[in-house]
Every structure is written in C-alpha cells, then in structure tokens.
Length: 214
Image (cartoon, rainbow, N blue to C red):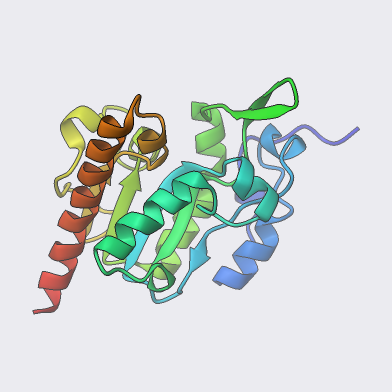
C-alpha cells in the first residue's frame, strides 16, 4: 500500500529550481491520485527562454504513452495553426495544467476525462514553477480548463475567447479553444471554421507579441 496522496504537488518540488530539475522531479510526483493510472508524467517542453507559452488542459492518450505534450491529433491541429502563422513550435514552450492523464476505460480504449477542481489545484505548483522560470511575454490558454485554472473560476470561453486579457500571468494573455475541439466538430465545414477561428486567435496573440518588438 502506498501513502495517501496529499492533493498537493508542493512536497514533490525540487530544491533546485530549473526546468531540468523540475522535469525530473515531476516524474515521481504523487501529489494526486492520477499518477496511479497514468503511464508517466507528461511535463512541459520547449525553450527556457521561450517568449510564447501555450497551456493546455492535460495529457491525452498519445501524450501519456509518449511522455511529451501535444503529440497526438490535437497536437497536429496546434502544429498546423502555428505553421500557418509562421511560428516555430521549437521556439515556444508547450505544457498542460495537469501533468497526468485522466481517463476511463471503455472496452480496451482509454477515454479522456476532464480533470476535476482538486486535481487541477494539486498540480498547479508545477505550472507556477514553469511560468516563474520561463517568464513568457505571451501566454495562450488553450481551452476552458486552462482558463479556469489561470484566470479564475468565473472565466468563460464564450466571453473571454480571442482577445487580450488583463492578467498577471504575462504581459500578453489570450484564451482560445483547445485544439481537440476542432476534432470534435460535427462535419468538415464546422472543422474548417473551428480551425480558422483557432488560428486567428493564436494570430491575435502572436501579432501583439511581434508588435511589442517594434
């Protein structure tokens, strides 16, 4: 029997704060119960000096197996949008609010389940450390879970999507859908429209970032 989880990742944070140290320490995180079913921790990836940070909800099935964020179908939608805007993903930092995959079994398939409030709160220290180390100039919140976690419980995509938000997270903060929403669209036309709008949202943030350079 293992000890009960503290519902808080802070006891697992390393003394030395660097991305490498955080990533290694996160592999042993037992801050909430999600580690029990997940294959592994999926920590953020990207440059320490990244000016753009993209924050999603949590790892999916592909990410859980690979140990890397946004490498599944939703990741391909993200890559498509970034490429269309001329953004090199390797120059950004990509992470999730929750670092373990939450799912339910349906037959032999693992089906994504939305993380709960306590699971988000338990995992938040890892994201706080990523933000503190990288200090991005621009943060894209991908989906309602990221918005609730980092803006507050009153955040809604309906009113908060697609425009710059007043936040202490970074000089520039914008929320949009999670790219997995594109995949859930009911038909090709709806997918095309969701893809176009998603790319436009990221473009709004990117143009604001580039303009800050001028």
